[in-house]
Amino acid sequence: MSQSPEQLLAERKQRLLDAYDLKQPDRVPISINLGYMLARLGEITCQELEANPDKAQELLEKWALYFQPDQIAGIGLFVASPSVFLGDLQTKWPGYGLPPDQPFQFVEGEYMKAEEYDEFIEDPTNFTLRKFMPRAFKELAGFTDLPRFPIVLIGYAGLNFLSRLNLPSVKASLAALEKTLQWYADNAARAQANAQRLNALGFPTGIGGGPLVMAPFDFISDTLRGMRGIFLDIYRRPDKVLAAEEKARRISADAAIQAARTSGAKYVRIPLHRGSDGFMSIEQFKIFYWPQLKGLMLDLIEAGLTPVPFYEGVWDQRLEFLRELPKGKSVGQWQSSNMFKVKEILGDVMPHYGGFPVSLLQGGTPEQIRAYTKQMCEGVGKGGGFIMGTNTAMDECKGELVKVWIDATKEYGAV
Image (cartoon, rainbow, N blue to C red; front, side, top):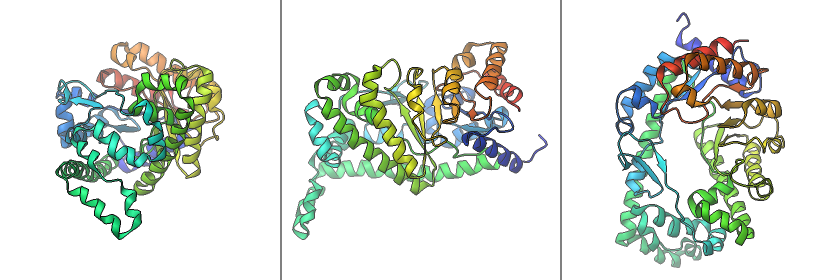
């Protein structure tokens, strides 16, 4: 290529930023996350990809140079080690609960009982430390023996209660937590170095990425009550659900703002698991999902951050609600919604990312891929504010078809 990596970096970064700013870039940018697809491209198992971060980065750089997208990512820090160290019961990973060539899975459970809403609402810190963490992480079972820390508010006399930290059960759990925290510290340094390596090759990093938090309803349902529990609760104890969601909103906003200030990130990712058309009625959505999600997003926007919700599933019946969001202050990442309808209704409200079906990149023909890419570039990409990307994980995509898709985006996405 005639351009230097420095020139490509500046060009690609500007192209992405223009799209995120609802402007018309010189062409539709394309951003991909190869994830576990890197293992297949490198002819290794998913477990080997996670266990060897140097190999993972080597593969990412190799295929970045081959595919030449505007932005690229791999598995990053989303790997098994912390779960293994802590005995995490909520996840399964390649080689940890799953065969070595199978991708990550989430295992839902009920880690907060129906009668514990008040305990969570009144003192979420105590509930997290002494109830949730011992239930969700086998190696943190000792935290059930922790003291209630507010007793230290009485001053010197309260320090005696901290002697419970010397209990063997507590010390074992603290050791497991320390090992995990050291892993995060080591890998944060590696991630920063890897980002610089990608930049040196001409690929921007950090645009659209940042800390991850949950929508308030998903916060309560995913890891505390489970889907069965939460949908019983909205009938049996709706006031408790709403109060818990308000607490979850503040916890999520505070955590995201603090993490962003520490890292310098400008975006906050919010995967939306249970707000789509198939999970609840519009009336339930109006009460239990949308006000709390909107409140969280406004909290983040007020703090100068850009929320990036991943609208999982189909949101076609909910698009009008999203027009209530401040224009240009959030980014929509889409899975299975009608992208042309999304553009029609929300084209002036937020930039859009994703939506290209991975099924075409797994079993489609080059002609089908080029044809649908052309439709998306001309329809969703019209007027700017669109970043081409897949609708879900690329784990099973074929490399040769991904190349066709990227090249077609560059051809049909040009202004």
